[in-house]
Image (cartoon, rainbow, N blue to C red; front, side, top):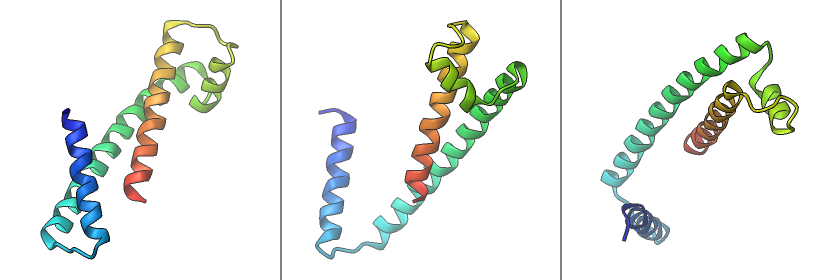
Length: 104
């Protein structure tokens, strides 16, 4: 059993307990702290990624969103800068979705 599978199982178990009316201030406080730490880490990651994206935007004179649409359509070719830029954009979008899920 992987760590991920074990973690999911434990979280599902806690969720089932809470659905039955179980309450624990210790669990509540621990979950709140874990979420806060992950939000902080995600925001830091977004800041770092935003800086990288802004460097590409400045260099090529277009927004990352516009670039990505054009890159995915094949309009821009496959220069290494474009490949890297697209990876950073994907990472930024993924981190943004994770943060939205955590913050609610």
